[in-house]
Each structure stands twice: as C-alpha cells, then as structure tokens.
Image 1: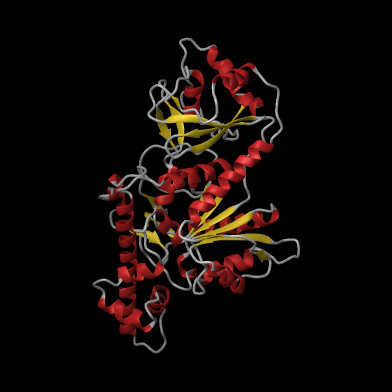
Image 2: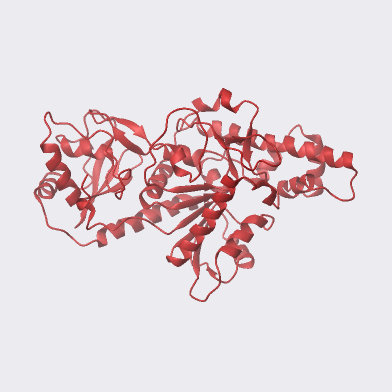
Length: 455
C-alpha cells in the first residue's frame, strides 16, 4: 500500500500521558468502588481484618501495610497470622473488583468512553492506569480493524496489543497495530501468576476478554488452574511486588513516558487519581521522573470530583509541575473528553488545504454536514461533522466517534476500488498495521464506495 496519501498529514502521535485512578472507573459506573469503599467491601465477613482496619480509621492501605510487614514487636505466630489475613484480603480485593465489573458490564458501554478510547488510539497516547479492573481495555475492543466483503466488521483490536509486555495466553496470535500504550502498573484481575512472594522469571498468564460482555467473567480456563490474579495490593510500599521483570518493564515505560511528555511539551492528566500520601511508589515515580531544570516543566491537569486535589498535588509534587487548569465536578471526566475532541477538531481545521480532486468535489456537492447517512449491511449511521481543507471529519455510530479522513486518501482509495470487479471493499484493511498513520477506519471504505442515501 502506498504511503503517498499521508505525505501531507502530520502523524497524530501525542506526547500527553494519562494517569487513571479509581475515580476514572467510578466515573464509568457508580458500581466501581473508590478506595475507601473498597476497604469496606473487603472487610465484610473478615473480623480479623476489621479489627486491624479500625486501628487505622478504616484506611485499607495502612491496614494492609501493617499486615504485610514483619512488625518487630510481634511473635512469629502473630506475624504468620497477619500474613494469612493479608493474603486472604488480597484475594478478596480481586473478587470485589470482578463482582463490580460484572455489574458494570450488564449495562451498555458509556458513549463518552467509546469516544475516549478512539481518541487514545488515534493519538497513540500513553495511559498509566493504577486500576485492577478491565473496563478500559474492554472499551478498546470496540475499535474495528477489518471487515468482510460486505462491509461488516470481523476484526477488532485485541486488548493484548495495548500492553508492551508478553502475556501468555492459549490460542492464535493477534494483530498489533499502532495504538495507545496501556501500562497497568498495579496488575490486572485477568493477569495471573503463581502467587509466590518471589516470582522473578515467571510468565504472566492472560485471560482473554471478549469485549463489553460478562460472558468471559464465568469460569477459568485449565491453564489458569491454581494461579492467582496478579494485582499489587493497596499497601504503602509496593516495591516488594515488582520483582517480576515484566512488571518492572511497565514501570520503566511509565518513567520514559513521563520524560517524553516533559521533553515534548506534553500534558499529564491525573484522571480520578489524587496521589494519596501513602502511595509512596507513585510519589517516587512522579518526583524522580522529571528533573526540575527550569525549562523542564510539565503541565499537570487534574481531573477530579474535588478542586481541593490541586492544593494537595502542589504540596506533594516538586515545582517543575505546573497546575494551570483542571476539570472538576461529577462530570469532570466527560468534560475532559469533550475538551480533547474539540481540541483535535481545531487541529484538523488548522491543516492547510490540498488540491481539490473529483472525489472531494462529489462529496461536497452531494452531502451536507450533519446529514445522516446509512450504509447497507451496517446498523450504524454516519454523518459528516465538518469539511476541512485537508479532509473531512466524520461522526460514526451511536457514540459519534470522530474520524478524520484526508481527501488525498479518499482520492487514491476510490481509484483503487473503481478498478476492482465486482465492486467490493478492502478486507482487513488496516493502515496502522502497515505502519501508516491511522486516519481512516475500515468501515469507512464501505461508506465511501456505496451509494449514499439518507439514513
């Protein structure tokens, strides 16, 4: 495939970094617990843990830190008892998250989340998530990478393509297109390991995700028998849980992403994460990854329910972080997504116009902005959001996912398709997989090559 169609289009690769905390998952659904709520849920029917947690005002991080450490004034029997309680509560954490996830999956995926993952995919952003749940990568599964000859989707983004580590899973391989990078620094409820305190060199096993569905929540394949979810429990000092080289690599990639963000004048979005004083490892990462060098400042944008988080962050972080705006309130995450999409739209509008070809003339003469267009063989409708000098911006599907299509891309694509007999669309056409910028989705080829009619 030629790369000439993209020669006038800048690569949409953003240096921005998004750090996701429990508040992000809670924004998806109230069923997902925040940290204090998580402590209450895991304490149910756990009297020994409840006794310890009460000593620390119900703070789950402090309580579990106390349980996992060998306190010097305790007898060996008491230390072993505390260790047993700690392991039981760690398993309960994964169970609570899975139960909450199952409840969320019984409802449709929020439209703002669908738009957000497409934005992350388009801009190839780095996402550092501290959440154990699988909601984010399930939403990524909505991204189409290919279709059959009738224009129906038959290939979706595999969630494993988001992670820069090898995950052991049965079955065939998968496409790894250029996409966002997701760094799950605290593990995941669908990653598994032996459960040993020392697990260096162990492969990390993976349970497949179907998508936004509860069907993969039940049962466990034989390959995972006897294994435990790889989640780093909520303790103040988590260094002992990062012995595996795959997990260490995720943290190294996080540091590199922060450095690249600073050097590339990017922005650091803290989404639903308030940097608790007890989360020492993240504090060390944020404090040590960026060196205060006068011109090495990094813009930090908090996205949180409370505005007080800005003052908290100023107290904990060095002066090289500047907080000059933020999104606050119950709908802060949705407002951030809308802001990012508006910003992206302005970028497309700023691109210089190219030479007007026959396809562009036809589209401009045939279609008016915001007119609903139906594609035979597909349930979704599409509309042209706006005409720009370099291309068109489309709104696709019920979530109104924004997709930018360059005019020169359409000119070349239409020429190729007009030479095919009988007329059909490209199967498994994926510009990302071939190393080209993702500016047109497969499903748009059917839209471009079939008669347009009002939806």
